[in-house]
Image (cartoon, helix red, strand yellow):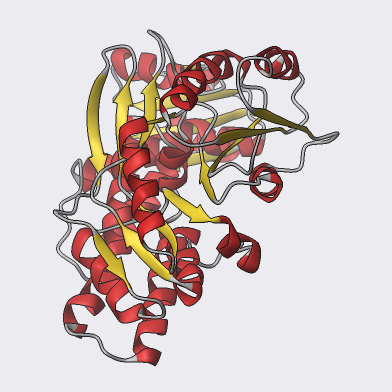
Length: 404
């Protein structure tokens, strides 16, 4: 095979269930593309039958198989796949996602038409394979835009206008090999890496997605998507990335609407924190972390409409602390509830606590290995026993001060 025009770079680790369908998809993609293609898959020391599947597929498509002898971590494995690629252009593909051939062909043609372009970014769609329906698209723009080399002001203005995270891209291999960009925990890579590539050449922002992020492969698929997991806690990295890009634009000068850009840099992390809180509440995240995040949003200086009332968040956090966190920390054997408490509440607490939760109506029922949760108890003898004997005696009024 002559030098390929495109290298599809796929890192994988113990995902044989999804890799089977991906390989079938890639066979179809390769057949539809009107230029030479190679598929570079880097197996990150999988313990399942990944390597066997890849060897079987090598007869059916132009496949380059990399097998790591030890797990390198996700970032290094991605880098290995892209460094091994020989194509004029490189595109990353997660081992459970899909490419859209027609849009991919158009994107490659745009890069061919601009020899100065270091890469092309595009929005991506979220696709449910069970229903074959597109659920959403991450950002939209009405036309294709080219940001000239080194024009950081134009870059952040375009990003701010469309709330863009520059994640899905096709890179010119020369640019990748010249820069070898790497992320860090201080600034989100989807903001820093485009800046690096813009120092090398133009950046094209295409309006049409060529990439589908798969939300569900089959009925009952509960696989967590990395992007959704990251949004739960990455808001400070998002802030760092936006500030990184903004700093380059300020140094260069030329912002046409600096107030709008500044507002984006300040508000974007708050928007992501609010998104994180919504996801955490929907997916049953740690109530103490949910409370902390809601309290931060409350103190952000912005008018915030929380997904649920703050009173609900703080009450949930207080009960979780008293029935789960504190008993686990003190290695209690049980949680004793004193005061007014109905059976439904006891049943609910038993579903979340790692210790048995019971309602106590007599002081002799309190044990030295208990954490006692006092829900307005007025019985002096029971309260005295709780205070003197139990590992901890937590009053509901103190909980509400703790989670104010």
